Image (cartoon, rainbow, N blue to C red; front, side, top):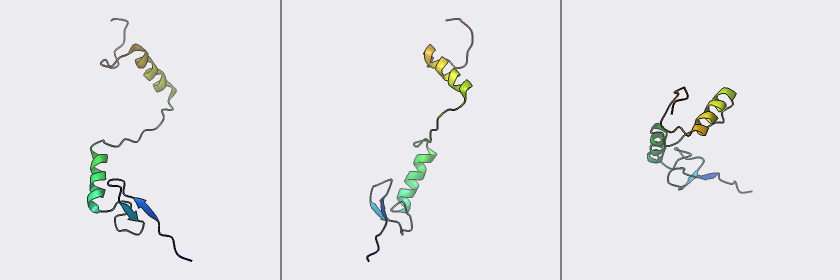
Length: 78
């Protein structure tokens, strides 16, 4: 039987890459560095659900007040 080669597309430029390639899963060192630069500059973000009930309540309170510019002020002023 013929052995099936594993392939994937480079996450940066979408070129087909073989799993046996030196820079896998990237097609080249250049694409690997571009991807690293996106991580370093904050272009990629790993998000996770918030499980802390107190933090969820605080976020809901901020959303209800519509506070886009205030941060953590208390009181019933304006």
